[in-house]
Each structure stands twice: as structure tokens, then as C-alpha cells.
Image 1 (cartoon, rainbow, N blue to C red):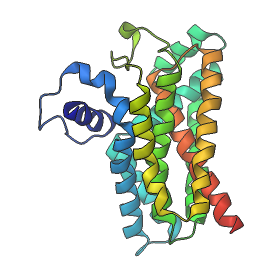
Image 2 (image 1 turned 180 degrees about the vertical axis):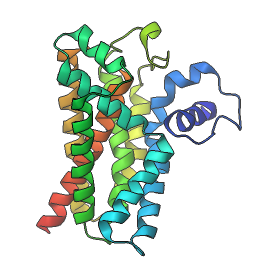
Image 3 (image 1 turned 30 degrees about the vertical axis):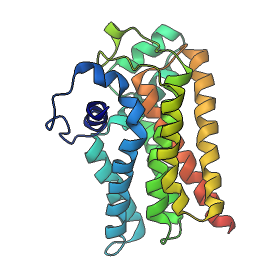
Image 4 (image 1 turned 90 degrees about the horizontal axis):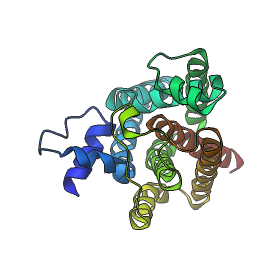
Length: 249
């Protein structure tokens, strides 16, 4: 389990977690099991950088700086998935064509526009949050978004075979016990917020469910790009709902 945890941190970040131990290749088939735990690192770093930058920079610049740090930390892994997902779903008419577009390393116009819209909405929402709650919401949204992202591995089969996978790895289906543990790990940071903000846990789940239904209809399963796209969409749903709640109170 420890090596699988290291594999998860190594796979989902640019940090050299593979150095402390020799990680077997089969561990990478289970990396999504510890994805919410990785969210504690990526979300925590983003929140900490945001907290520090808020002391010396205007709010919008501090928010941008914090998410740039996360991009560097993750190597834009999830953003690449979101762009490929939007390109495929937007430009493909058939299942085979969608999967072909997703596998293409070049970004298309749909992907560019999608990333611009995503970060435009994200930055505006975070910047409009109460400054006292901003770092905590940013922290809480990351692991919960990753938990909602891993739900598709439980709900859907892999849409390709192992030979056609981008990284030659097919994730093993997550057990129910691991999924429940992931929900606890992912939900804990949100408990630091006032209780009304706990409602922000619901929209990401509905977002994940909607995307699962859509992916099942369009491609009959999921890909690695789908995992990244669902995570970012669910994270955005969390922050959007928190923004609405903060505006109401």
C-alpha cells in the first residue's frame, strides 16, 4: 500500500516520490485509489501559496499565482486531460473518432476555448470569495474534486485496451471500501468551513454523475483524459457552489 501511495504522488505530481522506493509497475494501475490523498498535497500547496500571496498582491493576481504553482506542481496533467476531453467530445461524431482525437497530443480550438473558460470562471469565483475563507475553500475543493473524479473508475469500464492507452496503464476498478475511505479523506478539509458550505459537496457529485452518463453514451467508458476532466469540472462545481453560498450569506 505504501508503494501504491508513492506511485500516486509520483504519477499525479512532478515531485520525485519514486526515489525513496522502487515502485513496481503494477502499483500505477491503482494510483486513483489514493487520488484524494494527493489532493491534500496539491490543494494544500495551492492554498498555502494563496494565503502568502494575499498578503502582498491584489486578490486576482494572488489567485492566479496560486493556481500557476499548482500547474507547475502537477505538470498541467489534468488540464491536458480537460483539453483533450473537450476536443474529443466537441469534435468527434463517433466513438472511434472521439477516442482518436483525445489521444492526439495536439490541442484543438475546442480545448483552447474550454481551458480559457475554465480558468476564467475559476479565477473570478475564487477572487470573489471572502478572503478569510478563500484558502480553505481552495484547499477543500481539490481533494473532493479528485474523489468525484475517481468515481468514474468505479462506474465505467476503460474505453480503450491497455495497448492503446496513452501511458500503457489501465486503472483497476476501485473497491467500495477504498471508495468510502476516499470520501472520508476527501471530505475532511471541507469540515473546516462553516456548516452551510458543506452543501458544496453535493454539486460535484451531481457533476460527476452527469459526466458518467454522458461518457457512457458517447464512448462507452472512460479514459485517463476523462479522469482529469471530471476532476477539474467537479472542483469548479465545488467552488461555484461555495461562491453562491457566500453570496447568499
